[in-house]
Image (tube, rainbow, N blue to C red; front, top):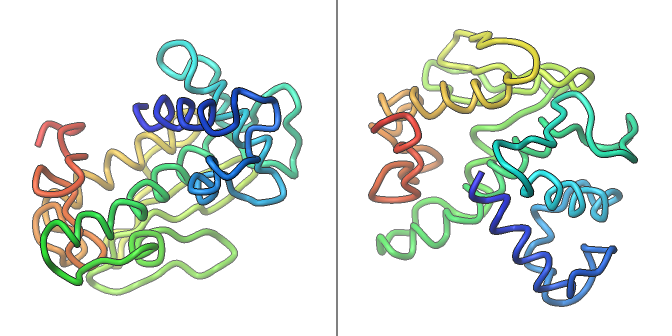
Length: 199
């Protein structure tokens, strides 16, 4: 997870490597990644732990670090939040580079991410990631009027993200091949995330 390593470096640089992790002006721009606000220090520490080692060896899909409890986000929830926040953060940059008004900050999350108990978006053009439950965390892919159960358990969040990318690459959601959230490209012309699925 490249974003984890980058966030870890930026957290260390901004916080001087301190234990608090979420303080200091240098880390202020990372605040969207460190949600929920009540657990910013925990999320910052968990990002550091997940970034270390290989293949997310510290990942606990239905829990978290040593001081995790039910009030804190699970690792699966952190991964989904980091993905959505990363895409949200890139939307203004990509739109500006393309010389278009296009997608704005938060456009991806607003259109493509939802969580129970909120009703998931439904239309023939729906392409969304929906958290059906938080304990244990379970994500679904919403594709048009269909609900796709990718798998359950440890790899649910990863497999759901991969199927989402594959569906976006094939033009699901009405954005054209690889486009989401008002034209934000997931392929080479934009965020270059489709290489993950061989596109």
